[in-house]
Length: 204
Image 1 (cartoon, one colour):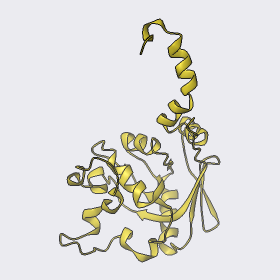
Image 2 (image 1 turned 90 degrees about the vertical axis):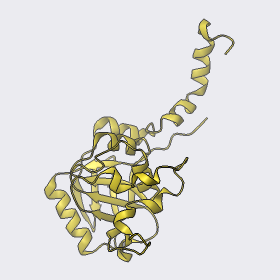
Image 3 (image 1 turned 60 degrees about the vertical axis):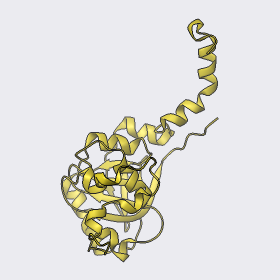
Image 4 (image 1 turned 135 degrees about the vertical axis):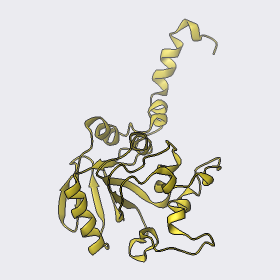
């Protein structure tokens, strides 16, 4: 049996990714989508915004030593993050760079769904709350930002912010049912029993 993995809280150093309408081609350029697996995509996240053509680093928050603490990270974004094409590589690149949760004003629907399918909590908050949180992070980034899925709060430097996670998504994360493959494997005995009772699958 494959054990379901609940996601109740995510804590990590915050990454402020300011800007509206940050699309999936900015998150990971299309030319990097030739890979057969998602391995190694983390180093390609926001590649064109982080590096010059010769590989030299640009000034970017993801290259800023203040935000480069080891361990998990939580991204804070603005409006319509993840718009553009539906490529699953975008959340995979962020996840493999270390971003395990996102908070923002709004997200593109398919990007949002792809994040949840990878066990990444995605929470929304109003513009004033997001701006306040971004300002607090940029002022002093040396603390963990905690996303509490159950309580629907984000906490930074001792201050709690209200965030929104839809009931269905919240339940998926808390129950561990965000991972469809694990859900199927965890119910393998029930699936076999059902299949055995169906005459039209006999012999398969």
